[in-house]
Image (cartoon, rainbow, N blue to C red):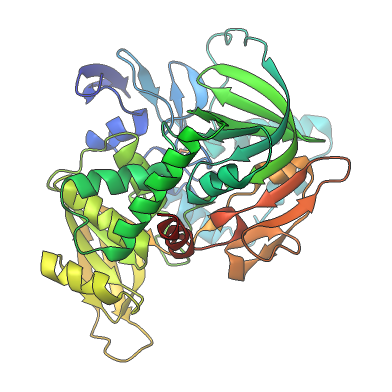
Amino acid sequence: MAGDKATIRFEGRDLICRTGTSIATALWEAGIRHLSHSPKYGRPRGVTCARGQCTACLMRVDGVPNVRVCETPLRDGMVVERQDAGAFYGAPMQKMLAVGGDLVPVGFYYKWFTKPAILSRVFLSAIRPLTGVGRLPERAEAEAEPATDLGRIPTVVVGAGPAGLSAALTSDGPVVLVDENDAPGGLRLAALDEAAAAGCLDGFAGLTSARAGLNHLAEGVAAADVDLRTGVRVVAGYHPGGLVLRHGAELATLACDRLVWAAGALDAPGLFPGNDVPGVLGTRALLRLLVRDGLDVTGRTILLVGGGQDLWLAAALLETRGAHPSILLESDDNGTDLATAVARRWPLHTGLVLDRAHTAADGSGLRAEFVPGPGPGGGGRLTLDADLVVVCRRAKPIYDIPYQLGVDLHLAPEQGGFVPRGCTGSGWSTTVPNGPEVTFVGEAAGETPETVLAGAGEAS
Ligand code: FES
């Protein structure tokens, strides 16, 4: 039950935490932001995607290594540890690597000391503890239950955000719609509904219209002959056209003739020094922590950097939760939303761009430094302190499962990252040889949240 208390053991101390949340969120609320280290340079890592799509939150939980704590529910009595005990991380390691950088070029660890076998074994046993990827489990894992076979489904839609809901409603024949969240509409609809109920969406015309459209689409799916499965994640794809689904601890497999890939995108904060500091994350991760985990941000200062509808949605939800949003707009096409933010008296700066982020000297929060932007009207340098720095910029389409199915991908920076070769935007289709037709829609096809939310608004 959210709000109940549980005690967990973290590196020799007892922490009293709120239940009904993830381990990562409970640790953040207890003041612990630093969950792991990068394997090579030993840089601290904290929650990054909050979606099980990276390695930043791998910890040892109850003796089991490499547990993604952003997705692991907190339970009373858990023992949680960072899993690099014994390695010398942080400044000493970085200094050593800086000095010996020429001796250890990228990839040296898999090119050197590979022969003879005895030397390789000695080398690996010395280097493995430095990577911080954990020791073997202290006990054997329980044997997994066999997966249930759901048979062949004509159309499977993955992702029940705006693009996935529209695709499910316009597909012919039987459709299964799966989404990892608890309700259709994605995290954005839950955030929009909560902010609207508190009156914090007033004046944001685009968000208000997107909310109406998303609710209309979700109601349409509920009334249509769509088999909606929430709390379900697609964890693997196998050729030709097979998918593995996970619901809690249960696994299921199915085959499909047509896959509509509407799984959205991952945050991409962009390149700047300190983009990996614990506490720097994107809007999608922030919404997930707030909506799914109920992250307690009461009284916290959250700095939002960038622009677009997700920035205004995050600010409205933060205000709903009793936090203090502080905004640095990097784009100048914010129209009436900007006037609404001014009327709300949110601290707001323009004409600057994020130059670097780092942990404050006393370790209590983050410090972000800004420099004048390229356009007119830029001020001088600016430094802002915050509990979290949330960057709202273009995201990377998620493509892992289509890639596993055999879809040919290529890097297209203008579309945000890897997309199918030839993909021209939402609704683009390809056929996997001897496999299903795969159609990419929404952010998974490189669309921006603005386009996707505007599309939802038109549905109402
Ligand atoms: S997998 Fe947990 S933060 Fe990315």
